[in-house]
Image (cartoon, rainbow, N blue to C red):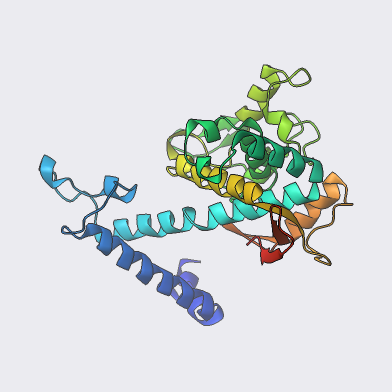
Length: 301
């Protein structure tokens, strides 16, 4: 097998993919070098700044350009496609469950008399139903749905009666875990109230749901941009439902409100391609400004 790998057949069999990867690597290196410029003035510190040496502290360069390019590649990917995919999924679920969109619209318009009030502030962060709608979409259709594997350390690992030797990569797909009925009743149903304590949903129920929620991964390797992602999604979604009345575009096959929960989930799965970060198609929606007759059409993606 090592000799077969030395032939580099991917350059012949998957030349378009390889060229695309090389182009993306060059772009990532360019961005990394831009961030490394000593004379660059930033208004605020970014995540990437934490990887660079601090001249004031007298620190030396800790990472090579190869390592920084790798980090740049991950940050670009994780900070753009994931958020846009999550928003597209959330719109899909809201529009296929009109009662949830109606409740969310009521919450936002009642709480914020003016559009300018929808900012990264406590009032927005306290919108329970808004956060619940996003979390439930992240549970049902996580932007990173596949395997986040980890290598077993020396000594091996025992899990549920099975032994895994050192050096083996193991993991659990986010999609599988977040559709497990042990943690989520009616796991294929879009049900934002499952994240809110109520008479029919105890604090223990909510804690159980959170215990299996891993859309941003968990532990020390969890997403460094989690807070920023939530900020972006809450502001964008809140402003959308404040400004517009939203519906699925007529004749759009990517959304059908008559589908059952399981059928809607299968439909969305068929519209999503897992490429580490999911690639999603649609839904196509129509937006109409509040209290105006003119409709504005566009895509959620």
